[in-house]
Amino acid sequence: MAYILGNEPLLTLLFSSLRQNKVAGCYVLEGAEGTGKLTVARYFAAALMCTHPNADCTPCLSCPACKNVLSGGHVDVTELRPEEEGKRIPVSAIRQLIAETHLLPTQGDWRVLIIENADHMNKEAQNALLKSIEEPSPQTVFFLLTDDLTRLLPTVRSRAVKLKTEPLEDRVIRSVLAKESGDFASVEEAVLLCGGSLGKARSILCDKDLHEAREKVISYFKALMDGAGFTKLSLILPPGNMNRADLGRVLPMIKIALRDLITARYSNVKSEFFTDERFRRDLASIISPASALRLFELIQDLERAVAQNVNIFSALSGFHLTAKKLTQSSHL
Ligand SMILES: [Zn+2]
Image 1 (spheres, rainbow, N blue to C red):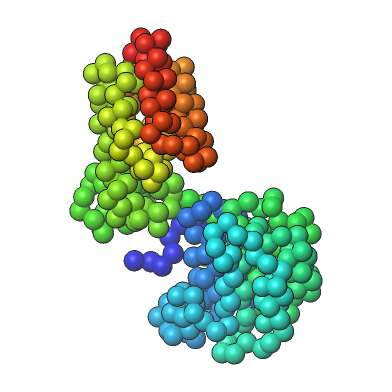
Image 2 (image 1 turned 120 degrees about the vertical axis):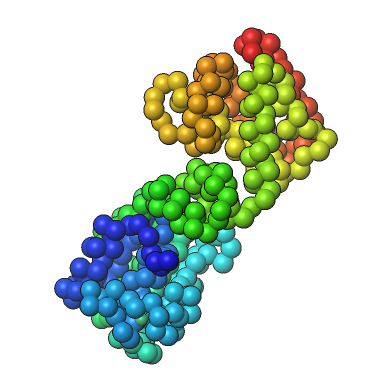
């Protein structure tokens, strides 16, 4: 399989700059999680390090230099990211990174510095970086990866070439997964839930708990079709038998399903939960948008309560009581 899929416009731009010898000193790659920011940065870094590049300057992907870059282990390609998810990148880490830019590359002609979650640099760290991208060392390329460009300082943004990564199209993900798995229904489910990220689609495909949770939510909506109203929620959310991890899987799914039901009535918005469009429309015909929205809000309240460490049993019991009242008042 090709190493890189999608993001063609961005890659065309990057590689034409390489062919014209106009590689910039700093690129910002902005895009949602799973849209290939790190993949693009590594692929371009591999092109700079490759000992046998193709005629169009793309990397061969098989020489030791390419392999090292793609696995994150090339001596002239430094990757920096927060030590833990949600943590800041400290100014000390940026200073260390900048010190490296003053050294000559060890193996090739270039030095590449990739900062993941670049928006996790505080102001001090970004200011420390500023001088290096203002007056870049020759043959040095920075890649700042972020899902939100606006969280970078305007001074940093203005000195970088700004590029956007886009989610993969469903058909691309579907065709890749279909070659890896014979289970058509699970592939469709993964395509639907992955938000255009092949990596996420693959992990969904392997995630048994997630698959089970989805089956449960679907069974619930089937019961709802039989006139059970929201009372049957207690079957998939039994107060005495749920932990935080279970809730973390099931509640977001119910919300996505409800959103699908609300949008089914008013527009041709693509479903994000239901693989069966007809089932979605049938359900939407018996659950009013107002009821779906009310249940959506109840689930949000429940999520907040769970996040605040409220006792799960009592939070769920309260939730079911309110859902029951909602069923009665909305004549489901
Ligand atoms: Zn190579």
